[in-house]
Image 1: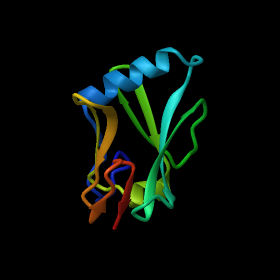
Image 2: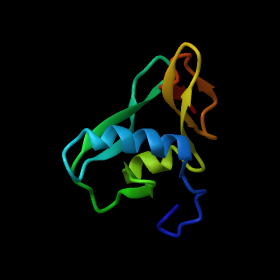
Image 3: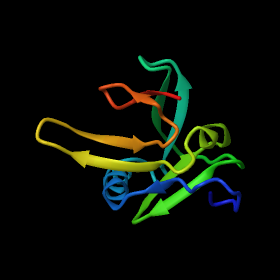
Image 4: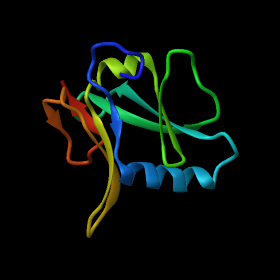
Length: 114
């Protein structure tokens, strides 16, 4: 991670960065996207996305192409080596997180188990 620990880095694809930057342009100055993991969802855990304007001291900060993503310390433990992506398919467009710890994913793409 960015803090120099031995955990694999969480990364943000170019596609995700472009989409996040576009979303944040419509928000107040200084807005960032916070990604967190919450208990619940159909597979045990679910990703939560919020637009925020403040950082915490333990946040991992991913910055790319005008996008800023925050991930708190607890969430980082559930996402080592994860890749945050944005995909556009014929019937849907969505953020997708490829999490190497996930042993099962829900069809909705926002819920997983480990």
